[in-house]
Length: 202
Image 1: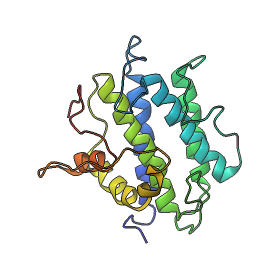
Image 2 (image 1 turned 90 degrees about the vertical axis):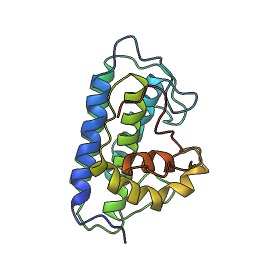
Image 3 (image 1 turned 90 degrees about the horizontal axis):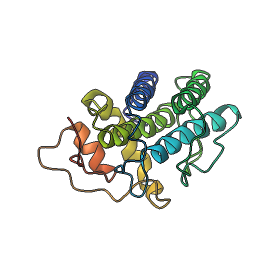
């Protein structure tokens, strides 16, 4: 059983979705090709990955259309309005999760683990959105969208699901956080990200 309270996952997911959308809306027009903490991916590719993952969660739950391309091999090309595409993916994800009961013990997910309890699967979905919001924010000179209150439940679930995902290249090896690391820094370090990546604003 996770340490996420029944129903708390809805707030976590909503906050993570909002963080990703606000961050993408704040990307300067000349910043889409900047490097990010995701090795070998620029801002557009991180956005493609994050958008695809939200569609993949939605498709796993309600059988709707999934991502048009492999989220782990983003092309770096997005035709049309980037923000509109992200909004559509976030809306699809939110609709799918809205149909899930708070205490559902086996929600289908696109993760290798398959079905997960609602609070674990939803926060895994939130983890993806929130951390990629951070990737984009620090790459485009925006303030970090991660708060301690948001990072705390994300870290709880990350510790339950991430280890099998590292084998798929979803996360880099964990790094040791600084002794004084707060919840945000601890989460980022666990996911293999340097909390002080160049350009970060805390």
